[in-house]
Image (cartoon, rainbow, N blue to C red; front, side, top):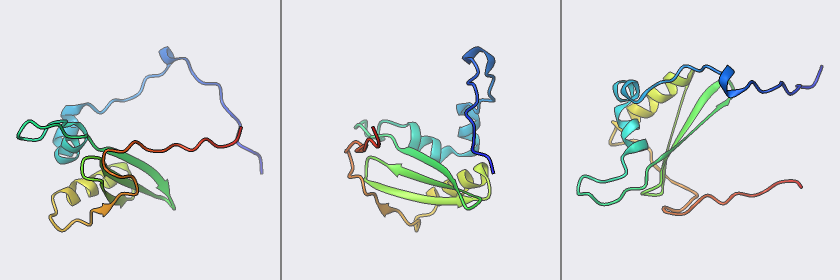
Length: 117
């Protein structure tokens, strides 16, 4: 079995990627978009926007929504990217969703550990 080989990176001019714009996000996942982009609460006070982590494990796309303002995170999974994002949107509509305490405290920056050298 061969090892993976590193491919030449195309120039930025040669790359054309499909873009999912905010209007499409707003239509498909309005609550998720709000969590990701709204930096103010209804009363005008500042709000830390959330981050979204996506990864594939055992053939399933897993998603973690980190609410940096509250220090909580929400996990979801699906058989594809859209299914995973739909699952997150559904959980955001559910008052009984299982929000968990994040390992990273609210308002704190992630601590990066440099490996190797």
